[in-house]
Length: 429
Ligand SMILES: [Zn+2]
Image (cartoon, rainbow, N blue to C red; front, side, top):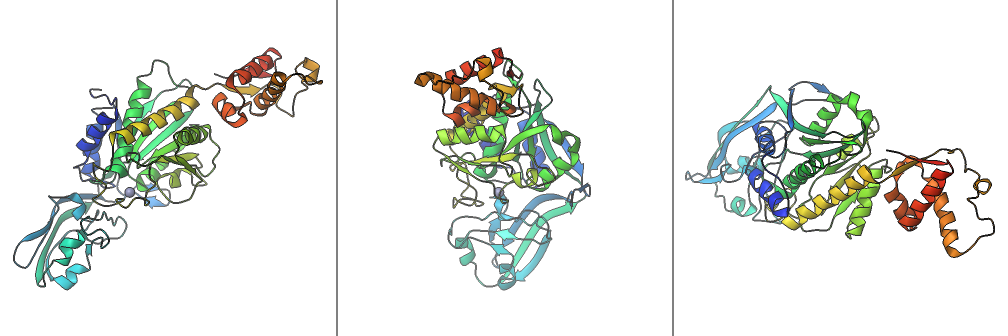
């Protein structure tokens, strides 16, 4: 490992390095991106062949793009991929033809409401070609014949993803996933990549092994998640919970979206940290990023999603305005801090198991129940005993109990000690 990400500025610098690369769901853009990430993290790179069946899908053909441009009737190049990789619809089929403006228009994409922005468009599962350009340039196109050239190819190759694992004390795992398939767009999705790399560096350089292993995957959106899940089925039962990182670099407030199940210690920790930073916590909806795959009923990993301003709720989303100025060192650093705190809570906060979990144990018999009811302090302690027993399921952490009971941590710890002395509770780990 040669490069260490230490602060928001270094996270932003990594985004700057990755920004020019033309990524898609397959191809050399993903490989170049992972090559750069290997300077920061010794991640493994996996290739899955075109045509491999993955659940209800197939690994698609690989896409390669060399150049693309449009020449006006007078020979002027009015659109050029060399100036922005957003100019070509991702997965465009090749074309080299002369056509009148009217016909060209059918394959043009622009944003009338933002005349100076280039939209980001894809056509992964339908074969066609498209040129994306600003509304301003589009409106100024004169009548006449245009030459369009897209030097692309779709061929049998492979889908590429990266993976890095931080071993834990047990074989249970947490999963951190981020997509790596967008071209020159900064918040969606370079911010997620940078924060994931920095988090992986921090966890792997910690002195003690974490409670659980933490697996980081850098995958193309949707098909990459489906492919990873299909290739890793035996591992899935070990995964306790996870989080998708996406759009974590802008200056907006944090947003945490729960998993479909909504019941993991990790998402409780994320929700707490996000609320403490005045962010918002949302319930699960089956729309968004790769949590859709991880949360599908047959997979059922409790996978939340951390964002800042949610996708589609900022007007720069999926356009050339999602650039390096939209993401800030402060936003990136704050997202990293949020992840580090949420994971740290799950990886280090004590957990307990009741040794008498079927109904409440009889506390009075053990001198733990003050029937007469003493002063206020003993009442709180009584309550703390009940909270400790109620959540001594091996899943809830002391951090969960402090947040849910609103009883001081010291009182809960005292209650835990009394219950351990009475052989009613054991501390795990
Ligand atoms: Zn996107």
